[in-house]
Length: 110
Image 1: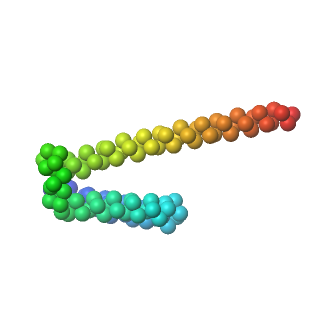
Image 2: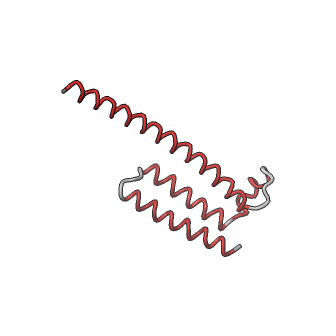
Image 3: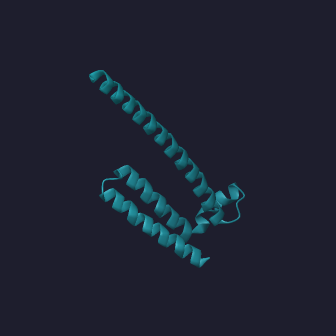
């Protein structure tokens, strides 16, 4: 188990570093950066102190902390995927309307 814990901690530290890089480049707002940092620090905390989430494990009848981390990860992944889908659809609609309006404008200009 110690090996998986080390991998998880190294991964979280790596993601903290990349979150910081994106924040410095201006790709993340301060709020986004804070949320990502809290997520990665929370992961490190749960990995180091798995007993700290025992009440959640008991409430949902989950036997291992790793199972809880995987379940939460899958739920978050589905949520982020849905949000990305909605945003892409919105951008497609805006792009389509922009191209249509530009084409009609060029048609009237000729």
